[in-house]
Image (cartoon, rainbow over all chains, first blue to last red; front, top):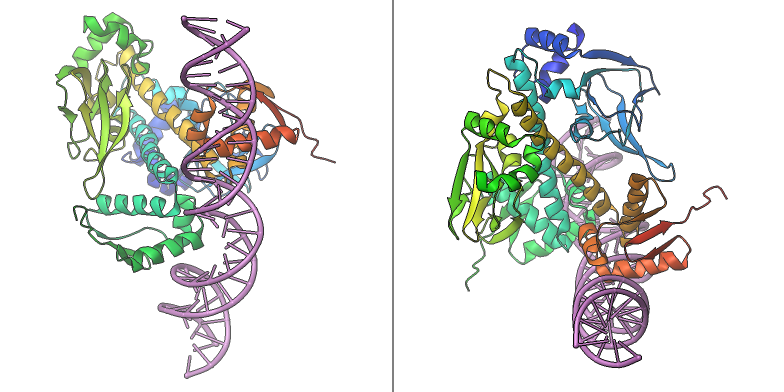
Length: 225
Length: 225
DNA sequence: AAACGGATGTTGGAATTCCAACATCGGAGG
DNA sequence: CCTCCGATGTTGGAATTCCAACATCCGTTT
């Protein structure tokens, strides 16, 4: 574990828990450090859904197979990211996805039930771990809620505008910087980059906004006139 | 609380916790039963995000205002449903939405921090409550993940097919029943009902599936020849 | 300064979706 | 059996999006 403390300390799951406490916690929870060879699974679809994993070194991907067995890559995980908690915490009996190492990798595995069922001597950091898991799940919920709201808008223009209004509100100013480039924004909103670009131009010409690079400025519209 | 035990016992948040245990739990957590008059807020946007609410009687809605103050209804909550946990658990400082009673209503309010921070004498049902919260958040995550995957498909046809393949897989059979009518499915997938209807017809004619009402049957396609 | 490359903007025709209007089906009730 | 009505399917033109190809801008390198 010593080798990975720098990763663990940056992992949202263990935020606020010191190195010594982590050691205690892992003992208490029966945490396992596992080496996975390139191409081998961390777990397979259909396995009991009880694990929460933390990626310690690069090269772990989540894959799912459709009804006809066509495999698609769901996500590629970075060191410090955790996986499996949504499935294990949702009470699913079986994992609906598989996780493979695409290189020789190390992962930390925790038993979700042991994490959530509190030990008799309630240690502070165990409670912190639960709060961190809850926080992560809740934050993903909020992120999903927003994304779905944008994607549910009918037109490219509306998706863009709802997103920009949200940014303005979140940043508390009609003038703000978005955290991604045009291509990433288009992908996030589920629209064509070029169509979005065209809409941005129209909005500019209509005097509704100004933008340069990642900087945007929404112009107040008189809605009563 | 006696009046509402039937609602509370059906609430996912309190699953597996008996009436007597609930009484103890509510005492321990300082739960508050609150009456809200029609039109009054349960909480307002900008309030500290620390509450988890449970709707006890009909008439509670979540609203949000955009950057220019235009109000839109986010969702209407049914008795037994909980609200606010995503915001309070995500560590937001302030509520990004308001919750209003649209009729005289009763709600139960819990302090999220007190729920997640375990009391020194770790009672079993307190742990259960935490697990139920985590389960709810995790299940919403899974539901969102699916919806986003469907909505991210480019065409109506692909959205529909990915959804149907998922259903087949989830129900373990090429023949299955979906839990909603055409209009609701179209809304869920973010497509036009009529466009979806047209796609279904095409797929039928192409021999790729059969359907009647909520019953569907996917035809195995020989992908190797 | 010139060359280069990545990000962004523009354009036009093909493909798709949207929308309204209407057709058809099938169950509930008279 | 008939009528009604909601759910579903069909259709055609308008609107939008998609896609590829290309233009422009701008910072970096040589």
